[in-house]
Structure formats: C-alpha cells, structure tokens
Length: 266
Image (cartoon, rainbow, N blue to C red):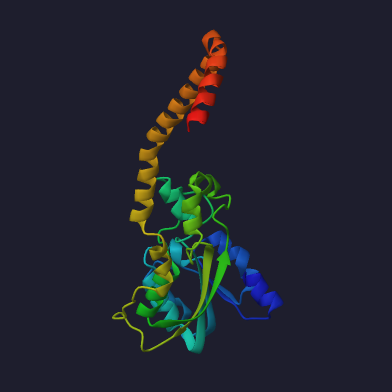
C-alpha cells in the first residue's frame, strides 16, 4: 500500500508498523517508518509535531485491544482539514449469520473471521465509535461478497430457501468489508447516542412467530396427509381386486338390469 501511495500517487508516506520485518520491507516506500504497537496509549508521541492530511487504517482496528483509544490518537495527528480512511470487515454479513444459524462461528487464518480479529464491527457500531471519539463519517463504501462466498458456502447452502430469501433483504448482508471516510467533528463526544437505524425495518417483514407457526402447522399436517394417502391407496387396491373377481364378472348382467330399472322408475 505504501508503495502504491508513494510511487503511483507521489504522496509522502509515514508508516507505523508493529512487525519489524514488515517495517523493513515498507521502508523503501516511506519517508520514515516507526515501529510501534498501536495498542499502546502514547504511540502518537513518536511522531512529534507532524500532522497529516490523510491517515489510513486499512484492516487495522479489528486487531486492536482498544480501537477507540487508537482512534483518539489518530484524530490528534490530523491536520485541520485532515481525513481518516478506515476499512473493517463487516460482522453483519449474511455468511456470518448463516454460520450462526448452523451453531458455528468458524475462525480461520484469513477472511472475515480471521482468528486475530479481537473486535468486530458493523457500519452502525463503527459509526458510533467514530462519533464517540470526536469524528463524523463523511462517506461510506461497501465492498460486497455474496453469502455463498467460499468462506461460508457450506453454512449458506444448509439454510432453508425461505430463510435465505428473508436474509437477502438484509441491507447489510452483502457487505463483506466496510470502508469509511471520517473527519474531525468537535460536536461529537462520548455522550453521543445512536438510535435504531431505519435500515433495520427489514426485520419486521417476516415476524419470526409467523414463520414458526407455519412450520409447526406443516409438521403437524404431515402425519394426517400420510394417513389419508395410505387410505386412498388401500381403497384403490380393493376396488381393483373386486373388479377382477369372478363374482364381479358374473354380476354384470344383474347390475345392467338394475341400472335399467332404476332409470325407468325415475
């Protein structure tokens, strides 16, 4: 990333890296690289009086023990018109929900549920944290991946079709990664409250009670349908047996005469 910023866009880059080897690899593409732990409470002091037009935290916050503390230090390093670019994986992705429906939360070495992730975010929770640390979200970009993404395919395919159709109406369900641009806002502080998002209206489109009742009714009806089907098949077999019997054939003239008499009397 530092190479692209410096070589392709001609920007002056300062890197902060925890891993010494990664810092050495990035050094040729940066004006300077500082080796520091972003979990610390005073790493920003290592930058002295430097202030920055843009600070990028690409897939960083989810790895920190206290991302809000890090954000406060990032905010203090911005120039007056500076911006923060943040990307985080979206825990509200339908693939994660599908895994939870399957009673699983599959940590892995890579992906949305990378085992090194210590914090999980939705757009709502990321926005709330930014506002509580004195920032305002200015723009949002959604990086999408279908819930049948290889990471969650087995869980998604196990869900009943009606559950998949319902989850498809989840506005946050297709977003795999959230990217936001935020700016300092003096009006935002730790007292900020966040109301229920209008985007959650999809939850009311299919009341769980209705779905459960319908499923229960279907389950209760199955034995009755099976019993009636069996009775019908047995009756058809008896009728076929009677039609092929000797008595049935011998009684054909009698039944013909009976039908004629009934027709005449009526």
